[in-house]
Length: 96
Length: 314
Image (cartoon, rainbow over all chains, first blue to last red; front, side):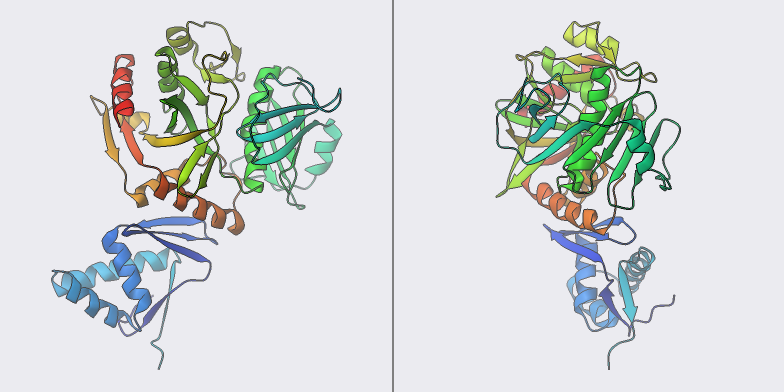
């Protein structure tokens, strides 16, 4: 599935998420997959789920971290791919 | 130990009130139970009827079988040990020992694997762990079979410390404090370890396929009361440990701790959204309340002293 940065990300149904300290843990109750996110991954998760689009989350993260834009874009795409693969998120067209 | 009638015996193990229609080799402990489970003998026909048409867990084999039945009850059996039927609400275990199974071995399976089904159904999440008591607090060692939990515990027993539980651990978290509950007064050890640490060369074999012995402990070797948990140590696998020349300890992040605790569940056969949701909540609270560390140690008897030093000073 191709992801556009104009799309928005939302937690998939039946996924539980919890911040623990500055990290995060998730479980998909349907697939019975557990996942842990380190502090950077947890921050990316929060930004993606709070923002109206992936691009808004990307811009927010770019302003927070001392990172090359292309590197951040690649890391974000990799995380999105993993989360989609584990059915932990859904990607939808940006609401009008 | 007699209970309310001649055919009913009452015990408390892992904090669970156990009522059994046969006498068990356990003392009665008196503390407020977390839940109640009745263990009753049933004839072979009761099990045969219950599992008719059952779909067994994919990991079932000639030695062990399990299935969740249409009414929500769970069936589990071990060849040469016996079979168990755990009610959907977890409050009753029907059991039938195999013909040549020793009472000790049957009890280990009934109050271990079979009981774990009843606990999960009553929203208690047991862990695969062994706990010793130091200065009135529990120190838990987590890990799979053959990871060294019982050997480490035996070395602590030799040094004069007490055992709280071997193999199955029930914890309760309340207000950020975590309490561990005492298991049966026995430890499962290979004969050489039993002889080395406990000066015991005798014991009852766990089952026909293992050399492990069930070694009974006396009242001076056990802690019969719940204790607060000080720390939990996740043992590295034997494969990882053999690459390490010395004992090392690493404090795990909360995320790593969470995933290790999930891996250390005693019961991997019961799944479903309801169980996972509860396990998620309980495990997250535990990881925030107790320090969890990874312990890697070379499998050498002389290194066990190093583990004592680390555990007793942290």
